[in-house]
Amino acid sequence: RRRATMVEQPELMGAATEYVRALETALRHAEALAVAHETLGRHVANPAYYEDADESFNWLLNERGYVLYGLGRVEEGRASLYAGAGRLENGETNVSNIINLSEILVTEGRAKEPPALLPKIGKASPYGNAWIETTRSCSAAQLQDADLQKAALEYLKSHESDNPAALQRALLCADDVDGAAALMIRRLASLETRSAALLAVQRPRRPPVPDQPFRAVLRERYERMLSRDDVRAA
Image (tube, rainbow, N blue to C red):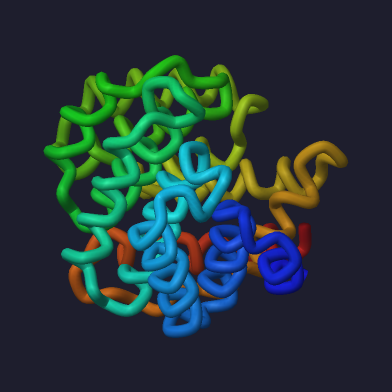
């Protein structure tokens, strides 16, 4: 469906970006990169080709960054994410792309960089604010800043309904597998959060990237959480 939409609406960069995202989710990274580069090539050759380039270019760079990480081309992926984060989002100060960049820097173990990026974020939604606090918490875990990690976790726990997935990640960053399991069970028990939780546990596991050591740590904790009898029963 994503490919058909891209073909039917060739004037929309957003349609091509959604197809790149779908391919990346399916771990078809080589195909995703080919589509991303073809789209970028058209835009560079003719900036007027895509009528939605102002709103979508940052997202194409964002998705291209994820694809490059998936291919193990970490430095190129990081550069693409930085480029997307440096652009406006919907004509305003960027929020989403900076959050995404900060999150992936955490997985690389580059915990000192997100604290410098987060103050540049524009006005975020409650959902976005939760991801910001998760990034703070996970950075603090690596930097052994107990006070910052505690403050971020307290915020996330008191705003669990804003973004349960963000709290889940922060708990795993803190190596609180018991807390993460209890939260997953709550998510699966709730009609409001069950669908997102089921999708999360079924999403294809990304292959490990050597330059993302903390991602490997989180993956091990996540798999340990999912293998628990109480979580499997839920």
